[in-house]
Image (cartoon, rainbow, N blue to C red; front, side, top):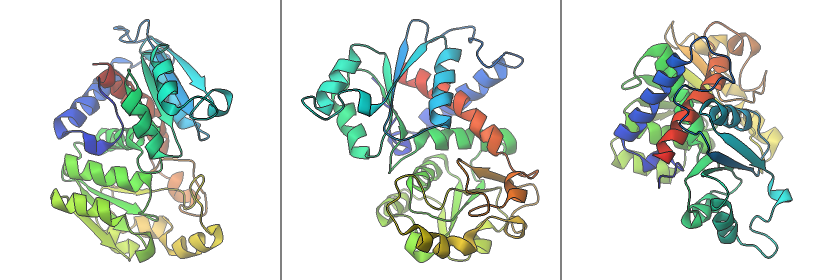
Length: 308
C-alpha cells in the first residue's frame, strides 16, 4: 500500500513516473469534455473518500474531477458531520471504519500529526491534500506546469518570494532536493524556511539560496512563485506580517529581474494588491490558471500511483 504524504518520502524515479504519467494522460484527453472518462477507466468501481478540515476550492474540485475522469466516484466528508477523532471514536477507529467503505482517502488537515496517525491505522492509501507542514499535491502540479511551459525542471531556477516558512515552501524544498532544481528564497530573515528542513536539504546536497533582497532572489530565474501573505488559520498579527512583507510584493519591476521568458505562479487564493499586483497575475507571464487546471492531471497520477 502506498501513501502520498510528503515529497521527501519519494525517490526521483517515483516523482518522475508520476509527472510523466500526468503528461501522457493530459495529452490523451485533448478534445474531451472535462467530465469525460479516460478510456482505460483505472478507478472503475472505486471510491475516493475526502475529508476537509479546512475550506477548499481547488483541492475539492480538482480531486473530484480527477476521480470522475478516472472512472471512479468520490464522497466528501466534513469532520463536524462525522465521528472524527472526537467523542467516543478515535482517529484510529475512524481510519479503520473508512477503510471498509472506500479504496483510498484524501485529507486536508490543520494538523500533520492527524495525517500521520490516520496513515498508521488506515488499511487503504492516504493522500495529503494539505497540512500545515506539507502541500505535496500542489507542488507536484506546479512542477508539472513548469515542465509544460519550460521543459524538464532539472537545473531550472525557481524563486519563491514572501513567506518562506510555510507548507508550500517546505514541499518545494523537498522537491528541489529530489528533482535537482535551484530554489532561491527572497524573504525577510524572520520568515526564512525552517532550519530543520534546510539542514536536511543541505545534507542531501540541494541547491538552495536565501536572500533578504527579493531582486537577488529573482535574478535570471525561470519561474517566480509566491503565496498569500496570511494563510488560513495563520495565528499571527496580520497587520504586522503584511507590513513585514510589503517590500516582497511581486510586481512588474520585480519580474523585470527574472529571465525575459520567465513565468509567474501562485497556488491561489490570491491577495491581489498584496503579494502580487493585478498586472502580473493577469499578465502574459502568468500561468496561474493553467496551474489550477493541472491540479486535476497531477492528482490523477498520484491516485493511480497510490493504487498501484
